[in-house]
Length: 277
Image 1 (tube, rainbow, N blue to C red):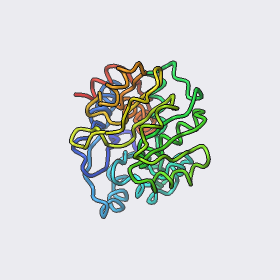
Image 2 (cartoon, one colour; image 1 turned 120 degrees about the horizontal axis):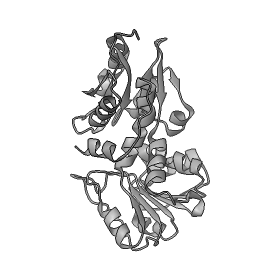
Image 3 (spheres, rainbow, N blue to C red; image 1 turned 90 degrees about the vertical axis):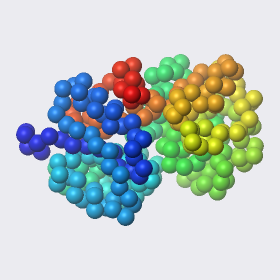
Image 4 (spheres, rainbow, N blue to C red; image 1 turned 180 degrees about the vertical axis):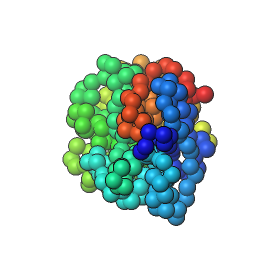
């Protein structure tokens, strides 16, 4: 890109108006005094391939990809990182100077960095992890937890077959438990993660019984609207260490911003405030 061209980036999904990413990247661009813009784009699945072809010609250096296009974006890329292949989805695309689209997935990285920053004493090797959900976010979390040294993952999903698909991909360290018995997996777990949308504003509540939560266990919810979900409120009452889901969104954005704009931003209280504005 020539010196006088302003780099553009953005986020593609549908719907997209709710995304906090424009506030977040806008905050970092301003903080570092960088020329650049980050734009939300509501794109349908039918138009995704055409849009990705045209964006680099318009001065885009890359984009974030969100629901429901993460799997499709992976298939449309020319180059794919190992972690994106393992997760089976892309959340970050880099438009290279040679015209190739490079796909990555930074969700697992963001998930782990959020825990490391907000629960510094967390020890992934201390015991099994319990995960609710088996969608794309769960795949990123499973990859990250196994990588961090969690010895075993107990996974429960409303549709058992989806959890079994994860088990088939990730192997014997995953154990599938029926959704009706989801509460039971908490008794063994030293790390608990909700990757479902249950408990989010406008969605049904997470109705899993939480009385099995262990005191001192780390409990995190990928839902960040509300910031304090019922899961986190109950876990706090029971003496667990809790981490909200906003930090994952902030940390997953760091490697993308660095690749696009050439500066590695910090995730601090001002960053959180900017995302919550």
